[in-house]
Amino acid sequence: MAWTPDQPLVSCKDVHKSFGAVEVLKGVSLDVAQGETICIIGPSGSGKSTLLRCINALVPIDRGSITVEGQEVHDPKLDKLALRRKVGMVFQQYNLFPHKSALQNVMMAPVTVLKQDRKEVEERAYRLLKKVRLSGKEQAYPGELSGGQQQRVAIARSLAMNPDVMLFDEVTAALDPETVKEVLVTIRELAEEGMTCLLVTHEMGFAREVADQIYFTDRGVIVEQGSPKEFFANAKDPRTQEFLSQIL
Ligand code: ADP
Ligand code: MG
Image 1 (cartoon, rainbow, N blue to C red):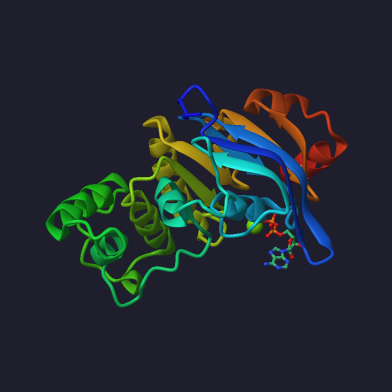
Image 2: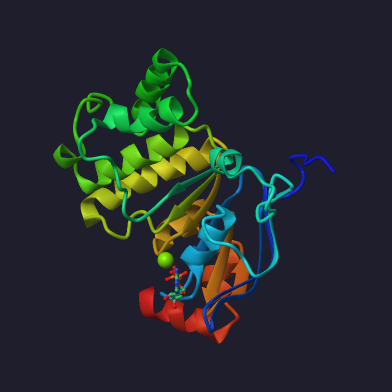
């Protein structure tokens, strides 16, 4: 059955994942509609990164199902390259190529993996760097950029593949406080332009203002889900309440 945009763009159903004897995801279900911004919040070790990695097929699942645009991600016949073109991912560690300029970092995958026309890719890379507010830094090397600037290059690099959904895994967690905001502004702009975004974040202000839905995870299960308003005002689960009481 062909996927249509009124169906969830990403759909996780009863996802189970163990590493050895440790069950890290214990039946996680979560949907992301096209154009939606979803924030996942939860204590360290609760399986947030694992879930994002499963969605991107970096990690196989044991049970359940994950679809992206209706296609089963863990179908062995799935074209993983095609999936990763659709699903952009940005990590806490931006892992830019240190000996390549910002522009070259953004151009690399479309040119080498997708074999797209260099001139066209270059034009797009300039546009994307402008979008993440790095015009003028095209020729800078990662070592000449702040953490926040490097992370925005990483976001532009991911956007260069023209994804339909972006996964962000604690992308501001390693940044100096003064550069966190500029990265959040970039993500916010993307979300407002209609990019479908799934973020693991501890930035509560961002989650409150930008998220359509917030999921709270604890030890491999989703214990709470709601709009930011419901989540921050009326968290029902004691684990969520305790977490919020520590940070708010
Ligand atoms: P979070 O992102 O919420 O902090 P993770 O998904 O990174 O949580 O990790 C959840 C649990 O799974 C942790 O106990 C972690 O040690 C374990 N884990 C994650 N990846 C692996 C792996 N590749 N091999 C073994 N254990 C892992
Ligand atoms: Mg994590």
